[in-house]
Amino acid sequence: MSFKEKANDVMGSAAYKINNQKYIMAIKKAFVVLMPVIITGAFAILVSSMIMSPETGLASFDFFSFLADYQPIMKAIQYATLNFLTIGAIFLIGLELGRINGNPSYFPGILAIISFIAVIPTTLELVVNEQPQMVVDVLSRQFTDPKSLFLGMFIAIVSVEIFSKLESFDKLKIKMPESVPANVATSFSALFPSILTVTIIATMGFAFHQLTGIYLHEAIYNIIQRPLESVVQGLPGILILMFVAQFFWVIGIHGNQMIKPIREPLLLAAITANMTAFQEGKEIPNVITMPFWDVYMSIGGSGVTLGLLAAIFIVSKREEMKSIAKLSFGPGIFNINEPVIFGLPIMLNPIMAIPFIITPLITGTIGYIATVTGFAAKAVVMVPWTTPPLINAYLSTAGSIGAVITQVICIVVSVLIYLPFVMMANAGVKEKRKKEADEATSVNVSV
Image (cartoon, rainbow, N blue to C red):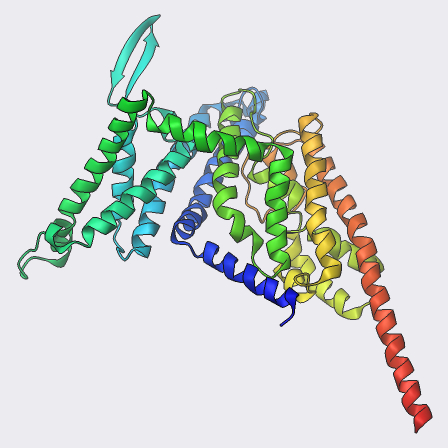
């Protein structure tokens, strides 16, 4: 076995173990389920701002002014989806981890929510009529929206693991007579483990606050979530994340799946914050979001392969490449590019691996510069990743023509990057054909 094959085996084995680690699996599955919720909230914001708003939407025209009366419907949908994203994530992570640990019921998800609420402050000080007022037994929005996402993920994992461990002890199970229905017996069996789990988690939160003077959510946000957000919001951070994804694609591993546990919480939280700020008429805080990734760094799919398909149509002289490009163009319009990645192939292909890795890094840089300079607007709407190019740029930025122009520039640049590598592939075919012709001539002469 060659060094290259050994290296691929080692990397593949490590990637498989990481990808199948139970906490990563639970987080990935949770965010896959949450995606329709986020898109529903984004749809509500888009309709509210571009159609029903009397300031910025269609309702600003007298003939359509009646639409403003229905704007509260969209605001209610936005509140019900985006403002409770953390609660949904906690439940789903707890649910998935419980299933992995052998408990297929919904209870681990419910227990995770209970444990989370047990460690956050539920007493707030508000200023009412210029007087401070203490309000008890309430949940602040910062504990239900993405700001507390990492705390929720941490509590969900810890609480379900404690519960699963305690549930394995027979002495803690209440055993009911056989005449008792199975669902009732199961509920009583989990009684002591659940009580102990919530008590342990609540005590942990109380002790942390007593010892440090700060709440657990503040520590996790300041120590873990905020630094990660800062890194990803910088151009070097997002380029490194993209490089890692592309590298795994090249060695035959689904790169997006590998980075999803890191990418999804941070970039989805960023677009959620942008959507909320847009809805409230505030300054949009984040440049790099999930739509930024899709609009500028994944045009036609990973590696900006829409540029590769165009380059093949322009200069390729290989019939098999043209055939694959024709088959891949339809899915590529919807950012699905497995046919070209595995059909061309790109993986383990040293010629195509180079542009496949560097193209999204360059287009991402172009998109970042265009956004921070104000030429392209920041993304304020979460659109499905299968939305075709140009349309996704327009919708995700709530109608920014600068974003559409920037994406067109990125597509042109991607074609220019891929062109010389497609021409190199042509040269390789010429050499192969010449060699075959020379061999055939040699055989004829010898005969």
